[in-house]
Length: 236
Image 1 (cartoon, rainbow, N blue to C red):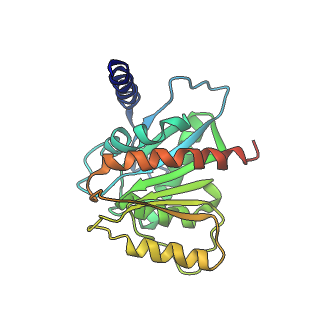
Image 2 (image 1 turned 90 degrees about the horizontal axis):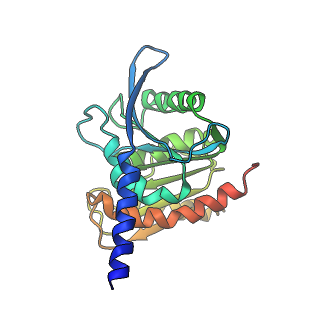
């Protein structure tokens, strides 16, 4: 029993240590606008070796400076630690993620990060929670050449009609979600599968309310092997 408790404590400490290394930074966009973002760089990062990149879109609420840090600490770090990737989470500059201004900012941020760090462009993941989940559907569907996989969490599909999916999609949604009900996600995924899209899937969670963000870390962790399998099939 003591051994199990010790292992559990070590896991928590490791998760905390990873989250504690989140840095808050900013840069000026091409238009001169200040772009704030939080970033987590694995301790074993070596500029000579390319690292995967995870772009994480934060939930809704009042966007105070480096608002996205909370998403990394609560969900992305504990959920996707196994991927050993650089994680970058920008602050929205235009309300919901489902608009062209935020879309352009995310793509420019990716370019900026790729200039600062050695990024494996064949191993990129877009994810987000709630409002960020909506944005993951939106930005991911419109820029499939920039991502090798997307994982929208607790977000309904905001996808233009007639989108031809080439990027694998792993959607996570709770049946207990009364804020963003699961039905729209179920309907969209079922329709895609009916059209022959076998690269899209929905993983459901029970008894987890919408605002219990940290409870989605376990299903997100379960998605890591799926992502690794996709990355193993990349050109690299």
